[in-house]
Image (cartoon, helix red, strand yellow):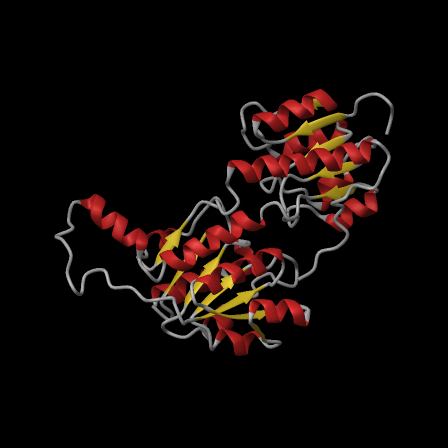
Length: 328
């Protein structure tokens, strides 16, 4: 990089302390309206920026990256997942890609646990009943849900977030099971009192609750397809706070509509922000607007990670959160 301040273009509005620090350190161009960049705007930004700071709403495919200007040397993504960036294309172009791992672990695990509680215990249905004015008071058979204590939780993807979910779930008396590309170290497995399943199908057919916590990669796209969803027991619940594309949403809607399994808690969707209208009509689903990581503390931590990655790169060093490969 040159000794002058690099041109840094930010595609969405970030927390004020983060934007202020970026303005101090770099020649920063902010998005004051928070309107997502169109494809043409992304193309224009990538043609002149030294560094681009996108978010998960910016789809940086191979064509956009190939057409990027010669000055663009770093894509410092504001987020953990990088499935919106064609990382191999960036590598081929000589562009470094970074993300913000670790800082969203606790927030996302909290939201996962909230959904694990809210779906079986029908919290959203109960809240709507009270607001409707139709609640007629307590009754022995009114709004009956299901206990989670003593149930089996199957976690798909036992990375940072998966392990954080497991620790919380143990506190609620859930038995921990998991499927992962690699088995955990024996000490970690023992600490979590977790049972490993090499075969995902076998795990799915035995769980009371399944939590999706793996990243979106080519290997995990539609991992939970119609066949695998059919393996869930009739009383089972599915929770997804990872990426919508991991679950075949069309097959999910069909299974939930048929009551093939008990219900679902979804914070992510395959075509978000569009949500299948059929999902909106189902009472056995809790729907959230991709807010698993949406805490003030988490967003500031993400911004600080981005700043460290950019500053380290500008100073001529290897950024600490460089993305090397996508794996599950």
